[in-house]
Amino acid sequence: MTRNDDGVVVFRENPFTKQWVFDPETLQEKLREAGPVVWLETHGCYAVARYQEVQAVTQDWATYSSASGTGLANYSKVKPWRDPAIVLEADPPKHARGRTVFTRALSPKRIRDLREPFQAYADTLVDAALDKGVVDGVAEIAQAFTLKVFPDAVGMPSANRHRFLEYGDMQLHSFVPPDWLDHDPYENQAEVADWVLNNCKREAIVGDGFGAVIYEAVDAGEITEAEGQNLVRSFLAAGVDNSISSFGNALWCYAKYPDQWEKLRNNPGLLRNAYEEVLRFRGPLQFNFRTTTKETELSGAHLRENEKVCVFIASGNRDPRRWPDADTFDIERKATGHMAFGTGIHGCVGQVLARLEGEALFSALLKRVRAFELAGEPAPRLVNVVQSFERLPIRLIPN
Amino acid sequence: MPQIRFIHPDGTEEVVEGAGSDSVMRAAVSHGVDGIVAECGGSAMCATCHVYVEEAFLSELPPMSEVEDELLDGTASERRSNSRLSCQLKMAEVPDGLTVRLPDSQL
Image 1 (cartoon, each protein chain N blue to C red):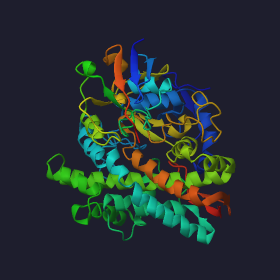
Image 2 (image 1 turned 90 degrees about the horizontal axis):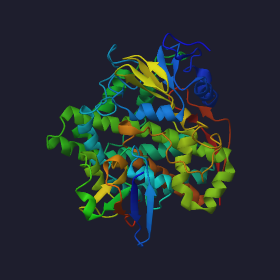
Image 3 (image 1 turned 135 degrees about the horizontal axis):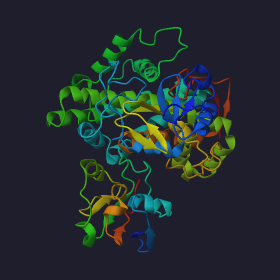
Image 4 (image 1 turned 135 degrees about the vertical axis):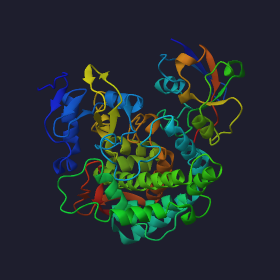
């Protein structure tokens, strides 16, 4: 085992290649077993992949800052590809203003009021999918559902919502730029980014959804107009893509492990916990980054100042040091404590909404679907930062 | 270790201990206290670890952040003047023997 000058284990393989998109679990295990903290030789940064260190880094925002970006690029050294997000890519005290407004817009009560419209749309969608029998679980269930209910809840116009998917790709490729693409993921950057930002402006927002709450905070002088736009963009950027990925992953889990769907049918009270287990077992987000604000020690390793730390979140959720039978998908497991939404002050602010979406969609499926079967080879999405599907041919077998 | 007393809506009581670095929420969850859901794991996102603090202890608690204040406006059971989120109360910062009542529902 090679160590760097400070005694930190050097990890020689490139963890961000295409190979690992198809097999993240093997990579995760290699990283976890290499040591509590490793130095990634190919990218010149630290990494943590065990539950305890993932949690420690994520919860200590003062030592492990988000203000220099949550991708590989260090904003103190290079210019970000777009204006930094004012909550995700900020530390206290700057973080607090936006976060307070987010919390108000996404208050648990406001979200409970969305239960009925979400459920109604989920029921309609599932009926249509059952009529077809075989569907693409990604396009016709996960995307169709999320692209309807989420932007509706924000108060966005309904035209051209598929452009969010293009924005999602751009955003995800920006964490660690992939080395396998034969096209430039940023070729439409200006156009797509403009479209998203224009749809986040006050003039574009309708109704009394999350967007309206944010612009009320602008009117009250809590945040500026530009910050308001930035917050609406963050809502959409973070909420749409990851929700879709998690629902696609959930469908795959139930097709792959039919006994778990059977268990859920026999005990629908497990529905919310089952989604937690999907997120633990196959949550979309694989990793993100922090930047050290000072020299520090972590689990016996010495870390230098102003260096990136790659936090392998999904790996922590599979760490056998924390989870008995970590590689078993078990909807009865106590899965809370997983970090699929992150943890600490930068934990996902929309997680209550994501859970409601998941509950609505899967309770609609639970009412009418006896079993899922794969109806073809699933196509993983070629992105290193999330684990999700591009296409998921799936047969819905009715009750 | 300091102790916390939880009173369920039906009047039954549970006393649990927790380490100083834990939150009251974490102490409850690790002892399996029903009525503390804590879906977000303590990130102040979900308001499902809501408790009503017995009046005698209220003034001895650390102050409330703006985020906790906003979240308490959206709890499943009504917010009262003694409402707090137990994930925001560190064991080291609350009086030993702190007594809290659990709401009827968290979701």
